[in-house]
Amino acid sequence: MLSSAALNLAQSLIRMNTVSQNSNLELIHFVRDELARLGVKSRLSYNADKTKANLFATLGEGRPAGIILSGHTDTVPWDGQDWSLPPLSAELRDTPEPRLYGRGSADMKGFIGVALAQAQAFLDSPAPYAVHLALSYDEEIGCFGVRELIADLREAGIQPVACIIGEPTGMVPAIAHKGVYRYRCCVRGKEAHSSLTPTSVNAIEMAARLIGKLRDMAEGFERSEPRYAGFDVPFSTACVGQFQGGIADNVVPRDAWFHYEFRDLPTADAKLMQQEIVQHARTLEQSMQAIAPQTGFQFNTICEIPSFLGSADDAVTRLAQRLSGQNRTTEVAFGTEAGIFKQSGIPTVVCGPGHIVQAHQADEFVSLDQLAQCERFMQRLAAMPAPEFI
Image 1 (cartoon, rainbow, N blue to C red):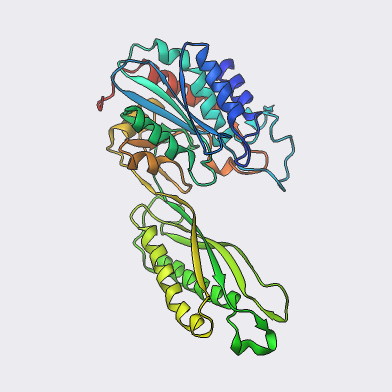
Image 2 (tube, rainbow, N blue to C red):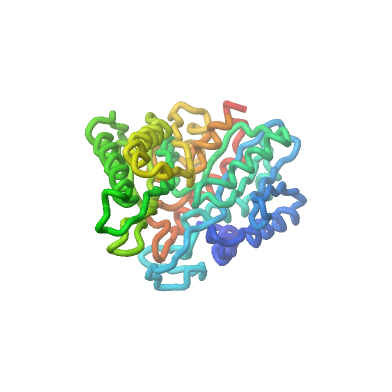
């Protein structure tokens, strides 16, 4: 049975509009104030214009080691989705099972609410380790906030020994996910009247040639890349998400742009994939610049979220299995901050309530049973003697 404290906190967080384009400070200040009432100080690290912040708080200050419970505070928008209830209502419905609805309920304010509800238990814990609560901004658009949070910890000399990220995995510890690498390609051609095409460089056509290369690579991954069992799609993928170009039917387009992404297996290398695209673009530029030297391709990085690869033998994975009561692990298709934490030297696992199929959708929800399982996970963490790696 989920406690009323955890449910009320989760509902309070869901009712705050923290879509990535908005500030998250209402939520951050709410958590800061809740912790302050328990005598806990929070570290805030901000974005450049101080409209968003990360929060890091230690429950059990002075203990020699600490385990991070990590969650992101931003959510995806709901524009154009067909909701049957207000997205920020945090409404409870009892059929077909007790569920908490609202944007962010599964991804991942339910987890944050449950963790916050256990703050006093972590403070009172006899365990020789602290629990750190880490909340980040802008995860949904590129995992930007967590990089600032980790940099702040390094500067402060804080060295957590493990991290549990509460993304929705059905409370089964996840030990791997693909990376997400997104780029914008801008193509500059040379415009002309469409009756004079030999004097022009068609930006759309040159973009299409590069997109063709991207598609060839994607088909190559599907055809030849060694499989990684456990993923819904057990090979790396490539995809164009947006395209725009041209101003009129009778004008050879000077400009075009498109966005594309790679989702690389933990055993692959998305940066080498991007290098292959850039090298092909440089080859295409030779014929373009023979007509007009100012033509060519320009690339900008949208986000680079590294893949994550842990192990069932990792101490933090075994800890998550004990806390969740699970004897298995899983892999997830979506990206998280896990690869960034692991690259910083912090052993990491992903384990949280709900399922990703319910996230980012109209009528997003998390079941109260999943939240109750998460609460038991937290309670066991508060009561558990030191894990092996501490």
